[in-house]
Structures are given as structure tokens and as C-alpha cells.
Image (cartoon, rainbow, N blue to C red):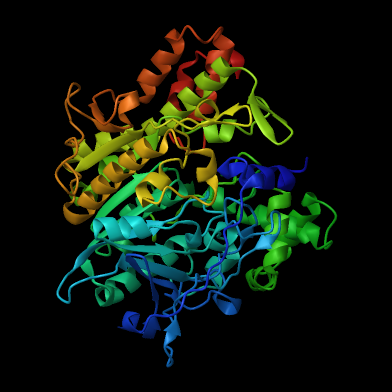
Length: 598
């Protein structure tokens, strides 16, 4: 199986058996005259569905096409007629996959470069002088796939009386890409940054700041929240000086703190001084030159690229079609490194990366950060080392091996994304850090497959609970049945209540109705509460926990775990846990214990 085919297969099944996931019917809604709003760029009209008012596909910046490809977003061009905001804008350019966009043809080059649109969900009835908290959703998908239309926060907006904004932003090579020629041929530091997807999110926040009052939102009470790559982007916005003042609280769900530095982003992978990634910008140009049959091999491509002027390389890149760029990139992709991290360019993001321990401004930002107990099971489910696929069904080869692999990978994720940054923020002086672990694992048995074992509390499973509709592009068909739906809805109500109460006041506390378990802030003392566990009563219910982990405690646990039969396997687990895309600290590996097995 080629790299591209394997990558597409993983993404296609990313929603668990997405190959069998139904495509939702597209429903056209009639515009509602009462929904007309006057914005800075012109008038828009939306529609009402049940208890929610919706405005979909509103442009927040100019289309980043032609001369604006790989440029910071420009202010949207005003319009004269009433803009019909009753359908989603196009997804941003990506490889087609069921999880990225259920309307896509799997494996195709899907979406458009003209994709900078946002959507607004609001309670149907809002008093004239009412100002509701704003929750700004950033979708996940490794910063390479996904679209805002996959998520429906209508229940969250209407039941919790918040305004929810969801956005599209440039993905993959169109969102995070920086070649030396682009630096030379650009004028502004934003255009030279390579962080175009991050700049899109900042542009959308500026749009919200300017216009959200027209929809009943409070532009002085904005909470950014996102999952996976969206959680990664939440962290990036917290660190970006360009986003200062554009939001007031943050929620990172299964996020990442890893960034790519300029050397990794730009240089040849065999640079003797500062090697780049295997898919750095210079390597991508090599790949394009070979695909265009301008050269025969990488050696010739390097020679040709080194002789080209910056102007010639820049024009060459801009004149490539989106199909050429996407196809060439994925044909040469290292399957283990398809995540596009933000770039530590020194302007949009600090050159030192995301350093929670030494960033003074972070002590003033209330934040929720959490992960799911079984994050890694979503990925292991399609790894042939752990499972077999027969007749479109997934079977675990060795349940113990599967569980322990997921456990250490998921624990490592939690250390990197929650325990370490939370501890550092508290030590910095932030008293409004709230951690969680999502433990719900009550999926049913379907077609001889026990989804509670295959998935459990896997990556992304918490999203339907946060959004409130218990829907996620068809994945819900494998999550809920008559036996678990009542308890699942109750847990969803609790989570929405916590999330919205945090949006209102910066503390989830006891939820909006003051009737939930009190969610305590991350304690500084070893015995103090650290995070809340989110689960149904049959598995222990909502409860606080004080057992935060560190890299050292993770290694100690590995060394003593009787389920792991030998030291070679211990080191294999350690390498996978500490050297994954989600974890930035692998100093433990330098202890020497694993030298004989590396």
C-alpha cells in the first residue's frame, strides 16, 4: 500500500469505520427576515432551526488565492447586497476523507483555497440589551483535514445561552509552510511567518471582536476552544502576541504543545548543521521538481533548486495547482508525521516554542485543558501491529498488548498536553487552571466488535458530549444505543454546563445551574485535587482526582509494570510514548537504560 493510500485509509477510518459512515443529507433552509444583521462588511441573513438562529458561511477575510496564496489574510471585501448566510462555506483544500468532510470523495483533492468562512450559532431569543458569552470553536484534523460543517453546536448554544462561532482555516501546506523564497519575496512579517492557518484564526477573532455584538455576543467575553489540532491551535493563540486581547479564556481538548522551528520547517533533511523535516519546504520543492519531470532524482532536484533565484522558486510554487501540491506532498509523506504543527517563527509564535513555565502573560488566562483516557486507541485500531481487518471489521489481536500500548501512549499525551503545562502555569501564578480526563467508554457491541474495547474513551469521543447533540459525522452510530443513550445525554448535559459556566465567568465551578460536582482548580500541593474525571455513574461518575503524572513517574511506572514481559518491550513503549508527535521532552531516553535496544 502506498504512503498516500495508507494515509487516506487511516483518515477515512479516523471516525471508526467511516467507510460505512452515511453522508448526511444536505438540507436547504429558507432565509429568515428577522435574522438580518448589519456587519462591518455588509448585511447578512440567516435562518432559524428549532431553538437556534444560524448564520453560515460568512466570509471573514479575502479568498487567499492567486497572489494571496501563502500570504497573511487580508480584510474581507465589503458587499452591497444582503449576503445569504444559510449554507456552509467550502472546506479548505485537503485530501478527501470521511472524517475530514463526509461530503468528500475519499482520496480526492477536496475543498477550495477560497475557504475563509465562519458560522454563528445563537439562542433563538436574545433580549436587545443582552450580551452572551462567545465560544470560538477551532476544529481538529491534524491541521491537514477537517471543516467546520462537521460540527453542530446548536444544542450547546441554545441550551446554555452562549454564542458559538466555528471557522474554517487554511490547512496543511496552505496553512503552515515557509520557504526561503517566500521570506525574500514578502514585505510584512506576517507574510514571512509561514503560520497562515494561525493568522486565519487571528483574523477570524478580529472579525468576531468587531461584529459579534450584532448577534447578541459580548466581545469582551470570548472563549477559544478546540480539539486535537484545534487544541494545539488554542495553545498557539495563547502564545501569539498577535492574538493578545482577542480572547479572554481558553479550552484545549486533547491539544499539543509541539512546534516546528525554522530549521525543521525549511532545511533539507540531510543538512549537516541544522537538518530539516523530511517534508520541509525545500524537500517539498524537490518533490515537485521530480513530479514535474524537471529532474530525475532528489540529488538533481537539490542542485536545480540551489541554482534557482528566490523569485523563480516563489513563482514556481505559486503557479502550482492545488492538485499538484496536495498530490505530490502526500505521495511523499512520512505516515508518522502528517501533523502540521505551528511554526516557531519568532513573530507570530515565539522562537523558543510554547514555553509555559516562562511566559508571564499566561498567568492571567483562565484555561481548561484535558485529554481522553484512551486517546491512542483511535490510532491503534487501524495499526496492523495491533489489529486485523476482515470483511470491513476490526479485531484486536492481543487485548492486553493493545490496552497497555494505549495506556502509556495516552498517559504520555496527558503529561505533555495537561499535567506538565498545568503544573507550570500554576507555578507561574495562574490560579484558574482546570484539568479534566474524559473516561466514558460505554460503546456497544456491533457486528461482533466490542467498541468499548476497540475505542473506549478514545481521541475525539468527547466532542459530541461537548456539542450536546451527540452527533459527529456518523460516528455516533458506533457510540450510542438504547442502553447507554440516557446516561450519555446526562453526561453531555454536565459537560455543556461546565464548559458554558467557564465561558461565562472563567471557572467551571458547579456548572451553569450550580447543581454539578464542584470542579476545583489545579492544586499546587501533591495531595490537592488536580483534575475532574468525566464519566457516567456506572463507572464512578463525576469525581476529582489528585494523581497528576510526570515524565519521570511515567518511566518509573513502565519499569515496574508486570504486564510488560521484558526490558526491550519496555523501551519500545517508552520510545513510542516519549518520541511521539505530541510530546516534546524525551530527556528520559538519554538516561542510558534503553541504549541497548535503540
